[in-house]
Length: 177
Image (cartoon, rainbow, N blue to C red; front, side, top):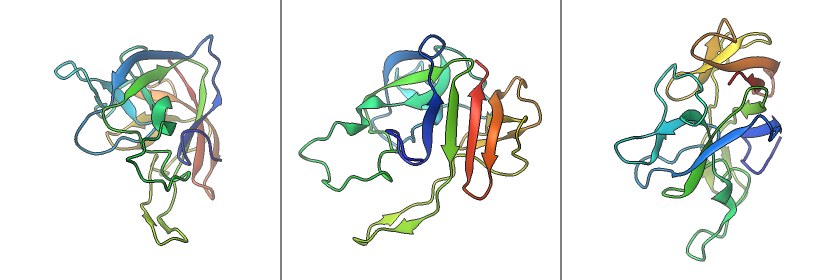
């Protein structure tokens, strides 16, 4: 399930005729590292991106999924150990985009904490809360993860669940905006 965005988020269908990627906005220079696929919006006070408020709906150009393509740009001053577990983390103070698009299909995957062979501890990542998640229902943002909502066209929903594998902790969602 790996992609260029790590083990926790990726695109299944990214039709460029419907997908919009707004801005070249920067991730915050301080604070917690944001994960690829987090729901974000532009912070008018700072000009940087910030995590969207709970139940924030997708809004093309202003609120959407965080995508940072520059995650692969490596500096000689960064750790030389890079693996799929690190690709899900965006870099601070780097250009990113807000992505939306009705019909774009994305996936989110929860991963358990692991210890790598070299002894590195990798934290668990919860992209969505699995309670009540089912095909035909919607997902909304609760401020830290995606959660079930009964209707995929609910005002707070980002889209409709079209595939769900509880054993793998994997959900596929078609965005509604």
